Image 1 (tube, rainbow, N blue to C red):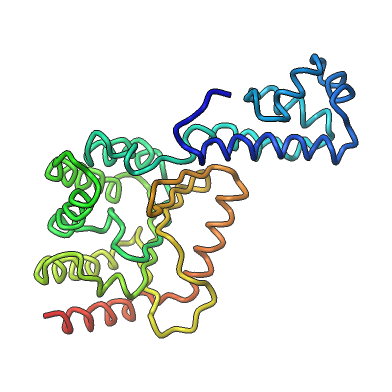
Image 2 (image 1 turned 90 degrees about the vertical axis):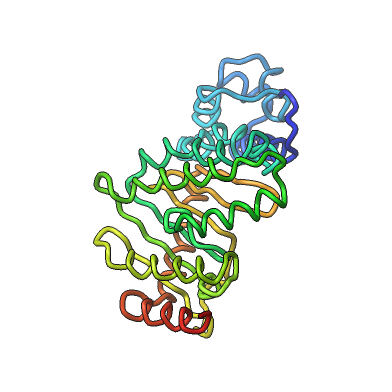
Length: 282
């Protein structure tokens, strides 16, 4: 396999090779026996099993059929598709500025019908006001991006918010109470942001849950993540941006979201909590 600048990609490739090798072992197949069932030269089996050659989707289907593990095909094919796109460092994602990282996600937003988002430190982008977005992206730009295209990036994020009012889409947002209090913007912009969230709570296609800081937890806080329909998860980490499409991994994040949703308050309770924070910061 050609080398990638990301060690995470290399690890993902090796994990795929390891999983294929384990299927063969579980089926009691060695290299020559597996090659005969697949109709391949033994060297091809060896190269795939050691991660030297990336298998095609057809290769994975043939391998799984030979091992009697057809049920593993969807996860393994998803792993193959993820190999190049699974991990992108912020440096790589934002090397052309912040605007590009905003606009390139628009097609994903346009084809998604069910959004689920969890925020542990900031309001999700679809809920952000102009001034709050500007302050947050300015902070990010100063920390890690040489090119100053914050104004264009803010405009792109605001444009992306139109999906909340188009088509038959539903949105479920979960935020930690600490998000309400984090001073990422000026007091005036922060209050404006809180007031905006209160108004959005009233939208028929939107659910906003706030997880109270003093509530007994059944799930620890985790990194910010988005679930798009039931097909993709994006996770924001300190060093980069993770994309997951394997059904089992998407399901794991969906389960985590469900557990967190049970701890949150909604509607009038959420509004009351937000308004108490507004009174405290003014």
